Image (cartoon, rainbow, N blue to C red; front, top):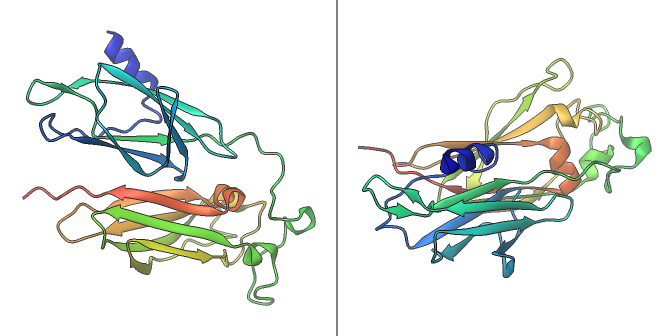
Length: 229
């Protein structure tokens, strides 16, 4: 009963990929967004997500996540029964951080919050001058990275087709030159990142544009899962 309640409590933020206990030698720790400080049982690891740790001893341990602009997150991780009947910790832990209550954006001046990206005056808006760090990686590397715009206000900001970026590891700085986008309506727009590699399942993640602007980054780490033969 206690185990069922624990799983339900963390269902909104904890995603587990089961592996056999015999194959598990390390645990992948990830967060959305990435680059969060990680503490194990309250002790600093001096590492940031994505990262690996050796499987701890004992029946349980806690993982804490800290990142500027977000509330501190904490997970209680317990051993779970595997397919072979043995108990082991999950092979991967992923935590979705909750942004702090919005006060003001450090990059968009108040007077420019309603300026829309337009073909008539390219490069003139604050959004187009705001540099965002894009960092996408995968294990294994060499996966192709695509992105597209997903909009809940298509009459203002249109959805787009997929655009190929490059293979992982991918990192560069880009600005938002999405037509019709303003800082005020950016909360209604998402960037969808897709990674694909031959022999592995395709994976997709979405990032809120308003959140990406406030944090000045879009970053994630994908653990690719082999396709079943």
